[in-house]
Image (cartoon, rainbow, N blue to C red):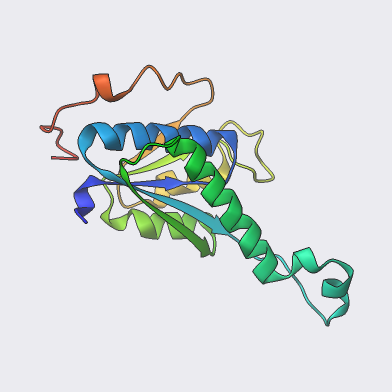
Length: 167
């Protein structure tokens, strides 16, 4: 693993994160880099006994985690669209999204995010997770805006190996 050739992508299943993943995959192919698709989830379960789980077993933390894992693998599979490159690592972590993504960005060339996720403020101009990541990430952050034509920047227009960030 060459850390300077790593794109960390925050994935939450939203259209915005799918665009971010598609951009990172395309750019990583062109640069010989690899991608870490990171999905962060928070357990909001408050269990005071077996009754909540008996009424809705899908709320059990292990069930919620499995649902998130299925969503992550679906999004990554769609993003790859059958291609075998670039190298890709999928990771599902529990925690606060902006904290986990900032930590994961410590050895990355770039943190790539969509402009809005699935949070309560999804209608805001810039999603709260993206905004917090801009302030706390330990590498450059690229926000892929809605309406961005992924065809505008692709392998054919990628910078050559002399790129100061990716060497």
